[in-house]
Amino acid sequence: MSLFSRNVDLPGLQGTLRDCTNPGSKGFKRLHAGDIAVINAPDITRRDAQLLLDAAPAAVVNLARFSTGVVPKYGPHFLLEANILLIEGAGEELARSFKDGKKGRITDDGMIHMGEKPIGSGTVVTPTSAEVAFLDAQQSLVDQMEAFFGNTIQFIHSESPLLIDGLGVPEIGTRFSDRKVLVVSPGTEHRNEIKRLRNFIREYSPVIIGVDSAADTLFELGYKPDLIVGNPAGIGADTLRCGASVVLPADPDGHAAGLERIQDLGIGAMTFPTAANSATDLALLLADYHGAQMVVNAGAPFNIDAVFANDPAATPSAMLARNKLGPKLVDAAAIADLYNINTGRGLAWLWALLGIFVALATVILVVGLSGSESFINNLIDTWNSIALTVQGWFS
Image 1: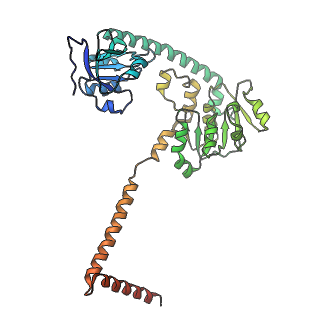
Image 2: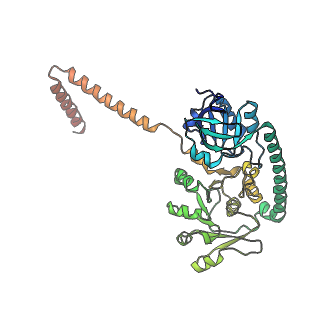
């Protein structure tokens, strides 16, 4: 445990630097009272702040801003109320320079040192500055939500026939009714999610829809999509020729980007005219309209936090499409977790094998010592007796 102190020769708050930039890191596990926690948490949440509070560091240095001005979060207030020094915006310079477990020092101007050497600097967060940032973020969120739901109302006005009664959804040859459907969209984890879903795919043989470039990922991993939804300009020719039905998102006036590529490849395709922003939204609505029993969505997660954070993918059409599916829509991560339960089978097999060896050894020991002859002769006599008995069964 390293307690901070103020030294006349080396002014400032002193403590051991701990790398807490990744949750579950060794630095976070070693964080003790009086240490200096180095984090990378823009808009730090109350939960993350509480994890730091439990360790009681003397200071928290954030490579990012405690509040970016987008979402109001209470994390900084909790830390300040515990009299923890907060430094924000230390950036990449500190990330490259500091080492976990080394002694650090923070001066009143927000400069971070290791010994005499400055390794980075940031801005000292005060209760006043934290409150101003919180109020600014709160107003920003209100303005953003007003704009978002204004756009949502406009989308409902223009697309209510599609949302209510499926008007405009193309008819396709693939049978969806009462089947499970897997919709795979491009995303940072979509390739890994497909791999984690292999047992689900093997067990249920779902209808597979590849959205945009994720169709290529499916094809590369050995899965032939039943349906491809997206702009063919960003999809490989071999994937487009794999035999899947192709649906092109189109503007409300009928213009579909990438139609020329489809014509050049000699592939048939259908258009799906709508004002929706994303091919993923169209894929979800298409699966729902055609009677899918359950829709598993991989690669394009959506939640209210994405809306609050003004994520470009968190659009009114994304929210309404997912609400349209309701309880039949499931995130791929949840399905993958169901197939990833650690049952301890490897350990069970080991114990079973050990039990067999113990049983065999016990039988050999009992048989070898039970006769009047030598150990080996007793085993031979027993074996011959068993063999003669078995022979008698079949004679």
